[in-house]
Image 1 (cartoon, one colour):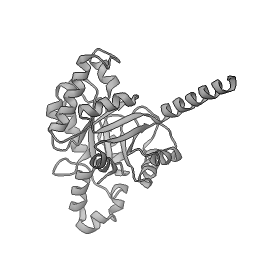
Image 2 (cartoon, rainbow, N blue to C red):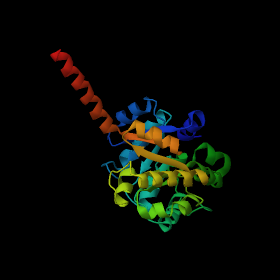
Image 3 (cartoon, rainbow, N blue to C red):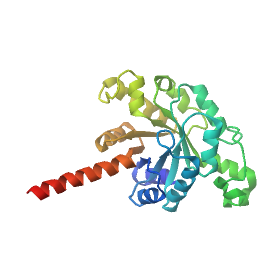
Length: 261
């Protein structure tokens, strides 16, 4: 059982953060904070696949799952991060169910999909325990069950088809990108808008109905607590760089007040 599902089993939710910091030490540090998982973001940061390989190792050294958000919907982008050992892959900007069906083909081995096989880091170059015990079929079955495929719902098109998408075998969860979803809905940043709140509830309900993991991002802990009550079991809190900036700004403001007292 990975750290995300273990946390959910133990306390009812899992909390992680998005890492934009291109540093092995930073990822290791996140691993000892008490966070349950880390999302490595190749979509909105300059992280490369080679760098991500090291960050996955750093996360695993602390017993944390490492999910990777890839830049787009292509076979190479999905396959590369899975081959280097990502525990899951998040795919942004999904528009319709046909893209998700294509993704299942890239990310899951037969019979669910047609993921390409090579002796790669993901299976310890075919020397991993599952491969040694049960051969290639055993490894393929294990990878299908333990690799999280998570399309990102951040468009109206995806929202309108969320029931069908979450019902697909091979989809393990949905990540909500609230900023882009609100923009796509024509209400940018209006997170208190009843239409937006209804959309979030609809996504959570569809996931839970179909046994899929609902994940959502927010910069606000209060908002995440509200999302949890809506049924979101995986909570994604801010970016590591933003948290660092805010922490130093708060500390410096405190110091400034103390020096003037």
